[in-house]
Image 1 (cartoon, one colour):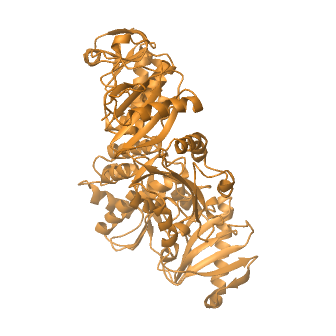
Image 2 (cartoon, rainbow, N blue to C red; image 1 turned 90 degrees about the horizontal axis):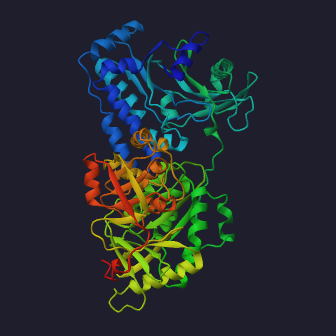
Image 3 (spheres, rainbow, N blue to C red; image 1 turned 60 degrees about the vertical axis):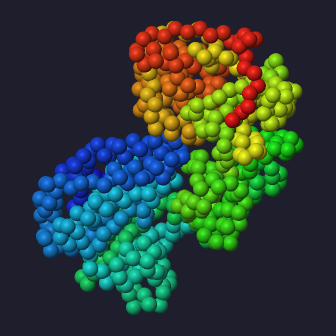
Length: 631
């Protein structure tokens, strides 16, 4: 049972808690078909949300919602009836059905208001509806977003459902044993002359009172005739605080006979002072001066990374007459975002149909329609002022990567599947070698060639990342390099990273999860992730490689970026199709791990046969492609 239910049980020994019982996983296994399998699938999906930094949040939340559509078993009614009888409830008992999740009411994060409560529940059909709804609220869209904010995505899904005798309240409300802002030992009480749930959920505005040392310091005039009740509530809050050993936040209700304690939790850091003033400011992250960003500091780590890396590129692009896109550094709270005039001006500053949102370390690289950006920001934000980044996303017709070579040529690789797909190793690509002053080249080949070499003079050994939209090139990003490649014309085998490799095979199976991991911000060219940070599929591949003492060859359909986690354990890599300039290919060359693209070797690996290959790092003069049109 969860801590909230256990706490209520303990408090019931000394404080007036209405009779209660609860359901946990042992009950759900009886009530619902396939409960264990579905729950495990939900937890696996939440882990994937964490690993991918929320890049596919909507898709994953939809999957969780489908998994939580439990089907009742034939034994459900009799099991629930037995539970009610054991708790002393009969068929006509009026009940309150509440949540008691393992992530609820902690010292640092309460999840208050996130989970469902059902009041005045009577009869088995209504009880079944309430129990299912309360459990599902633990994995609802709102709960998952709150897990993201609290960095608790991988905390197990544990939802105890409390079934409690309903209190017919003449007054109900909440109380803090201590001022949640100052910590002063002054009891703050809010109450309504109705069910307290209406006030807690924000439907009814409560009347307030302050009590210290059994003295009423002040209250709304309508509460003055009820001074005795207010003092009794203050005593109840103090007793709950003493039992918890921490300042307490309680929910209470008073019927015609008695004052009851319904819930008690520690006063958490979430109840800090939050600005009610609307805040919505922004600056151009790449181009703005350091002085213009002073009001936004300290910048989130991802924003600082974008600025330090892409500001030089944006200034370089300006001098060479190409677009570099823009990124807006935004400082805002919910109050600012809900102001139509303020939010519309922000949206109007973004010139692309899609945007990339980096909201926090837990929510990164979400690609959204521009019209959906505000809705997502309202889901993620609250009264706290936070800084985030909204970047223009331009897929265009073609994604391209260029790299200057020592012989004065430029290697170019491109795909109609887009730049992101090339980088993450999931695109089919074409390649060409660009040279200066070649009249047979395409219109923008010389521009690609000259700007790529100019970037090398300014930024060092780099490869440039481009998008072509219409007839215009947009310079998107760059990556530092320690190696370069030239294009070979072999149709049997293409060099990705030079060297000799011989060994048994470990086969990678293509799948949506591997693609999601590779596309997400969690995988970066700047570091090699651990397989344990990327989930069970990569951990199993590492286990297989370790079983071969690092002498096996990884056989994969594409150079998925997530496979970087396997670099320390593999002798080599064979791909059915591969980009030479994607992130994994760069890492393979920089770590000296042999790799090739070869359909024949790939098929040999699928058959479980041992693979041997050897590729020279230099292309023969006759094997270099001519310049050809990029399309």
